[in-house]
Image (tube, rainbow, N blue to C red; front, side):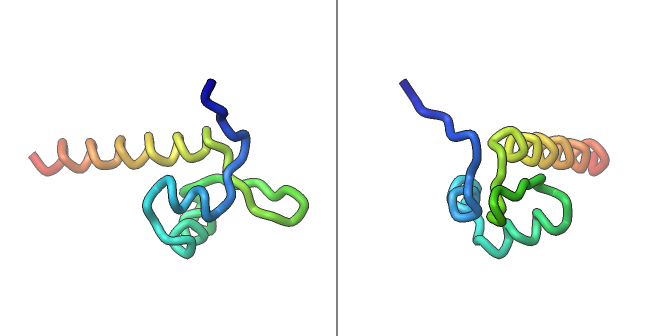
Length: 68
């Protein structure tokens, strides 16, 4: 059975997206990735990460359509 984490840390999120931690913080501050605070520590739900990825894919598709 594969264990799905309820919350990801900033380093786990950075590793999952192959981005730097500072980029993850910037995406959070820009509102691109939704985060929550748990006892003063920023965490990201996997569903928020999936929404970010889905949005990035949608934006990329729209750019391709508008480019044509």
